[in-house]
Amino acid sequence: MTCDFILTISTLFRKVRVLDPVANTDTITDVWLTDGKLQAIDSHIDSLTPNTTIIEGQGLILGTGLVDLYSYSGEPGFEDRETLASLAASAIAGGFTRLAILPQTVPAIDTLGTLSFLQQKAQTLQPSPQFQFWGTLTVGGQGNQMTELAELATGGVIGFTDGRGIENLGLLRRLLEYLKPLGKPVALVPEYPSLKGNGVMREGPLSIHYGLPGNPGITEATAIAAILEMVAAIQTPVHLMGISTHRGVELVAWGKARGIPVTASTSWMHLLLDTQDIASYDPNLRLEPPLGNTEDRQALKDGVRQGIIDAIAINHRSFTYEEKTVPFAESPPGAIGLELALPLLWKNLVVSGEWTPLQLWKALSSNPQRCLGQPVTPLKVGHPVELILFDPQKPWTVNPSNLHCLGMNTPWWGQEIKGRVVMSVTG
Image (tube, rainbow, N blue to C red; front, side, top):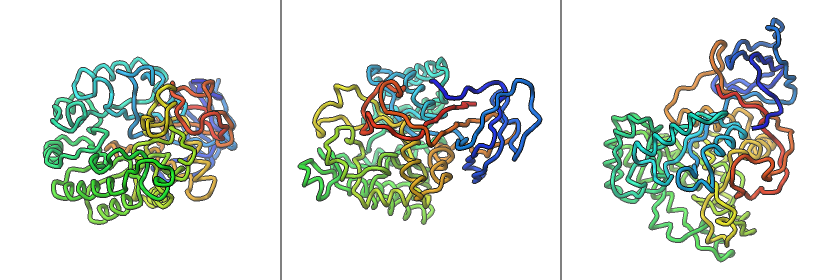
């Protein structure tokens, strides 16, 4: 990626705003890095080694690297949509120093062969985020037959998910029982496909007005309720993916209040858009789960701010121009987002005053890492660091010359937005 600033062996950030979501601090200070390690952090640093590059940090934000819980890779199977290399470049450009990939590749990540291919390919990429790979719960992610869970766990998957709802509750019960001693994260999509039917947007007055098949909110709510009861009985911790309704937020809060071991995430676009925006029939707004109604979006924003919803996921999914240039109802669900999420969330939620900078940063960095069962630590002198330098005032246009991913499927295509990551330190 092209950066406005280049990290040298010794770099000093002078008077930069530092966000550390683990220490819960938001300060303006000097930060000195040497060889990718934090050498010093103080109100004023003068004693520097020769050849130290000084970056004036006024107006810039230095924060911990962002962590994405789940996004899609086109490779293997659909390299015309996205390769692992383009995905890596897009992640770094967007400030994501860790990226967890869903197992819906072709073939799926349900054997050690596919897992090993992706792990080896990821090691050849520079610069690159730390790639982590989910394994499927069932063969092919089809919800019928359990995969070799122990084998995949030993092979190094970050955790297990099918990336879609599992309607067979008997199978889901057995999966949770088998997975409990493995100690790996389990992520479930709360939906019942039979209730969803052919719905392409959230059911309500607007789905009728737009003449589009509706996906009822009970698709999500009934699945969450069933999962919570099962987790309460078996006590295998579960992460609930893609919460998208106000009732979903209420049920997660209910489960957490009773000590049920669950965490939850929502997609970044569900915090910014709702069914009113589908008036444009832009196929890039066809998502899974679908955008919520206005009350859903407000409940999700409140849920993240209050800690009911732990994390924001990007759920980046690239498609070719031809795949997305179709009528809304025929469009495959998904949109790109790795390079867009931080600036658009910052503008709409932080600049607007709804959230503090730390609330956003926690939901995009330390909290996703906790959901993955990984340790988080505050910035410590002498330790390697994953940091990004973000310029919230830098304008840029969403077009091929500025994007690193292969896809163009975003409703912000061709628009000028403000905010850009200008340096990434991947540790």
